[in-house]
Length: 176
Length: 176
Image (cartoon, rainbow over all chains, first blue to last red; front, side, top):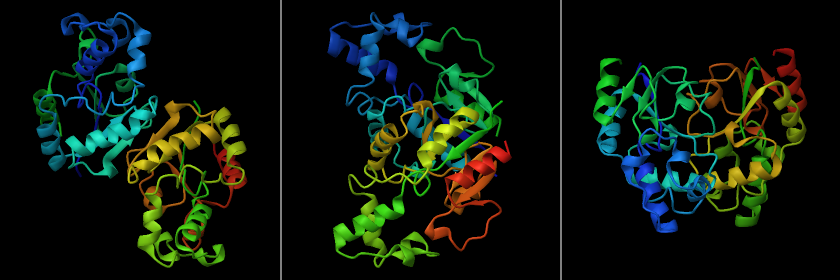
């Protein structure tokens, strides 16, 4: 039987960091340098955390996010050998539900709707692997968690860290 | 630790059967009697299955569905003693995502967004109990499945059947 992998969206498939920088600049006229985000929680990394949070509720924010480098080819390969589920904690931002589904249909049309999950917390998700950028999700992971590097988690220690999609695939194929 | 319960939406919280009858009559001018649905798969119970399926993609179909009798009080009680998750296989009908979230906010405002899951198949959902009207979901259930009676499943045999929300609560409290 194929092993199962839960793949997060924000910061793992979708370049939310870049989108935050872009929208923060467009909306508030302040350009935050990517280098300054390293090692800071997302809400602490921008000048005004309330303003940052507002972006996440704005129509369009999630819809035109760029894809993380290597993600499309990696997921296309992984679905041949694993049961791949896209699992996004989207429920906090209701307007994102439709946008995230459209985004997946555009960039990952080869993923069946059967394998997409939008949830609140991820504690009831049971897969052999979970690729995520947040410890709050990995801490409740029932299988093997894999911390996907993002600026905000740069200083966190965790057993299995993958810095990019090549490393993520290498780890999965070595451990399937 | 509280035991966890996954609760389906369609036919369990939301009276989709009644909604199908109403919308089929409104859209196509054919009133199907509720009694004739008994023991038939949903797609076979209406005169034209393609027309029925079209309803599920129409804006508004899910939004103003009535609540199943007793569901609100039951869920309000259950969240005191169980970890309750609403788990709906909504991903096949993307326009339903926003509508279902709004519907839950209106009728079940006491359920946190953290406890809502919209998915495709339910095979990666791991809870102690799962209340659902479809065997395709219960067959992959990792915990104790509970078949919630709907016309379409009237002739199916299953270990644990609950005919209404009183029976569902009785079973859960006897087995927690």
